[in-house]
Image (cartoon, rainbow, N blue to C red; front, side, top):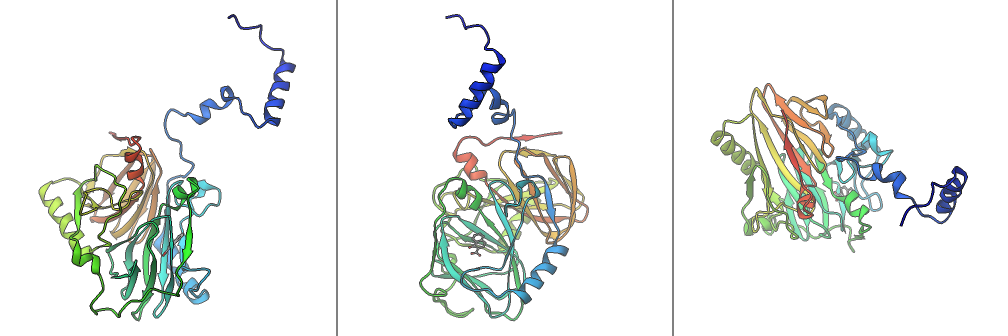
Length: 350
Ligand code: 1HN
């Protein structure tokens, strides 16, 4: 069949008007935008400074109690590229949470899965499905999808930790459910008593050298990964390979897959004077500076960081890291989802 002669401009205008009125969109005008040659995330490379965040968190402690309703004293990282959404990147929630002495953040559960990486202070435990997990700086605590969780500060100082969630992803899938626990908090004995940290009695921590190759549908049965073990493993990896940076991923001890079906957690130790080649990957990542200072170049943008700072590496932005003094970086990413769907890519540049 031969096409008819091109429509007159007036006919085209009419066609577009009628399509619009019928809630139909012509792909031939929007296809380039829908299918760019590579990912174009709206989130931009961005850094939040500890010096700013902690001051504001201290003010929030004085001004805002932790209660039912508000549930948590959490300052969420809002990426300036995301038009006011409280998300660090299109798929990831990242935040600084703080809890003062004697405070308990009430028990609830939700379908978004979460991880906590402890930054400052001592004395808090998170009770996860009935298992009180003590939290110390450098520890990773998991609260998988639909597990009950509450936080209690039984110590005499403020405690701060990083919260990472897959909330924007679960929201995009229209699968957010939430439920408050029938009581304010789950039963838990005091720190140091028996019947706590039960998941650690049953499972040993496991780490992948570099990154887990697999994603799995089941969350890790081990709910806490202790900093002493993580740090010893980083030391071992750094000795075995004289690279500018040693990396490990926290993995499910039973399967070797990422700790949650949606989220991967990794730790990087940059050697003093180390500088990594820039790498770009599909999927978003949030980095939290645990120890030391250094510089990352993300999507061509240099970002100087020090202890407690947090920054975002959006999907497909090349990122290289360096440190004169040496540094430890925690990383949260959505890699398991991309791997599970067969759309993960990575490329070493330079
Ligand atoms: C949540 O439940 C926690 O349990 C922290 O500590 C941050 C952000 C969004 C939705 C739920 C927590 C959260 C959250």
